[in-house]
Length: 267
Image 1: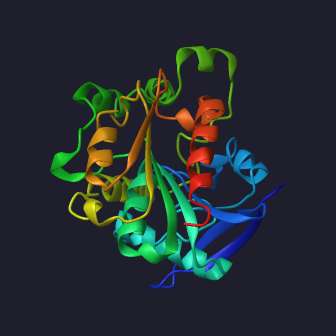
Image 2: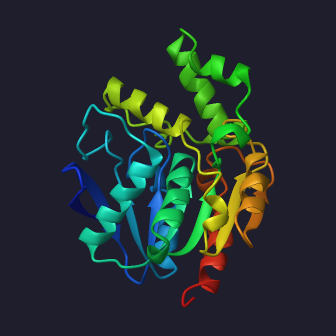
């Protein structure tokens, strides 16, 4: 089913584009840094087929959302998600955030606990001094002068060589190609300054932490940090998966997440 497009207005007047598809229990799907709702193109239909109404959005600075040139933050992005839920008439939803979307989801569950039914945090980090940062060699490879080589390296951080050998793209998890340079910088700063360590113990929503064992873009060692910090959280590691586990390993990750959400439909 093709998603229906809508617009919400954030507290500061910024228009936030969102997309809704399917029917049933609302599930908010939050994309990674500098990405639009298309991050979820391959996986969202699986959730709709299982009885969920999926809600995605284009982060401010991306896609069809406004692109103000001012500081962004993961906590501010969480408030944008609430504006979307309000506009969509959704009081409470499951929330599944991956990468930077997982950082935003942490704030959603901490600041707007009454709006989050169950929480899934994928390939993400608590941020701050306690987080496990990617290796310096990874950071250097991503900013090398040869942009074609850097782009290829990013793909290899997302997917296994086996997957890349048989899937020619397009790839919707490597950033919005039409995003202004200033907005990319704003996103990078927002994600880099994320630090929810102190509020993680206050999260009351049932929580599942998911990570690929071979993720070096956002090191898998962050998963147990988060799972141990959030009360009663569970953790699931997907063997051999890299950062885009939800896409390449959707036959494992999708049922895993759905089984968890099914436990908490009426909680």
